[in-house]
Length: 324
Image (cartoon, rainbow, N blue to C red):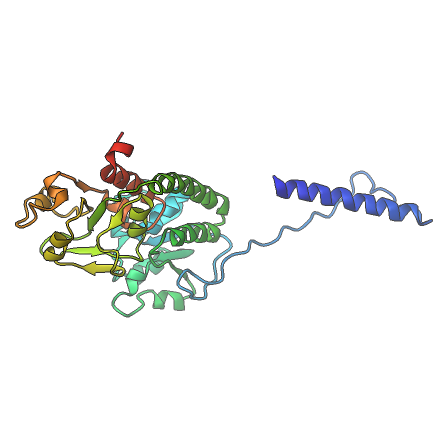
């Protein structure tokens, strides 16, 4: 609205200036165009598209995108949230159960996608993840050599990074206004939880399990999940460590968390498995039955759906304030 007001004010100012100049000269004003004469139409500027992807690689984003391949479930969910799921012509296998993708479209392996099949689908753009290069090689290099645009979106480790991912994808697809709306809605929720969390005096300690026994896996600082725990006014028992980490059972027992969260979905009744682990019976979270499951996708995919995980985490850690 401010931009519109500024434009109107500028137009009025220009009209007054031109009128003043006309009054100060003896030049005959130009004749109005004859009725029916063809008027020149102002040319619209070409969209300002990104010239690099989120990994810093130079890219040429097509001005018109109708055929999209997403080789990342996080990106797939963002594309659907932007209202462009109908333009997906293929996804990765982990995106297969995401609501909103067209039925029966091809699915590819993230680590080793079939290049010939990808090319045969004639995509305008491919959104990939840094996971695809985990083995040290770029499986999409042959595709890029053919002139097909491949955009890398590495998984962001911060909420701010997630905002930037969403706005970046929305810019490449020329729906920035929708991307901004999604981010605004996220920020409202985050601020609500942050306000409550800032008032917590006796912070609860939390252990969040990403992989179950015998090879426990979790995270320290520098991960959006740690940021979410802190927003809620709690404390990650592993915050003194960095990024994604393997941990020992002894370390968890010694730190004695008040609450245990898990998003492990490959073990039946993951919360019950935690409660019956030998030596864990004296952990405060286990004794008080404060062991909870958090939606796997919402808590592991770095996109707008982390708000769902944030809500579940809030209800688990501070049920007296958040329980519905």
